Length: 109
Image (tube, rainbow, N blue to C red; front, side, top):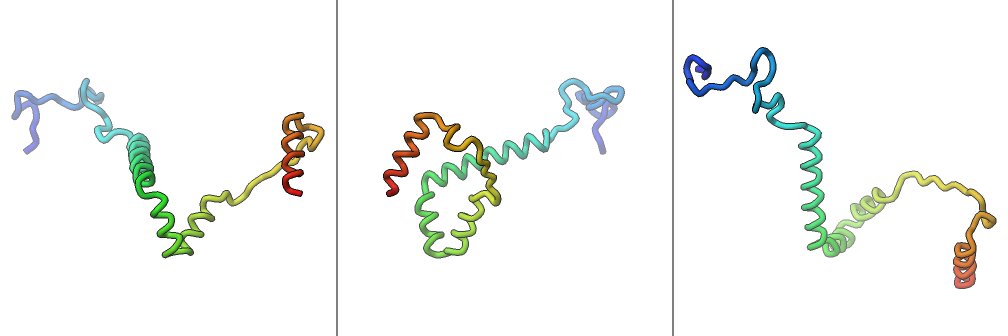
């Protein structure tokens, strides 16, 4: 039997004239998007903590025991497409930038 004003003297209706009564939410479960963001945040924080603790050892273990999975993970981390644009060339370089490039070229020779 449902509780209502006739059976329970402490009953407070959730809706009054089609509107939610003060203190009653129309979505008691909360926002689906907020729940997803909260879950993602908590998951990533836990993952980061676990990685700090076991990260290098876990990567090494995967590399040694499952090289195909290791390479797949590496490939997924690299962008599929990288767009490079050439603009300005040497003339557009600052003096510091051209000096750095010249130093780099000398080291490569």
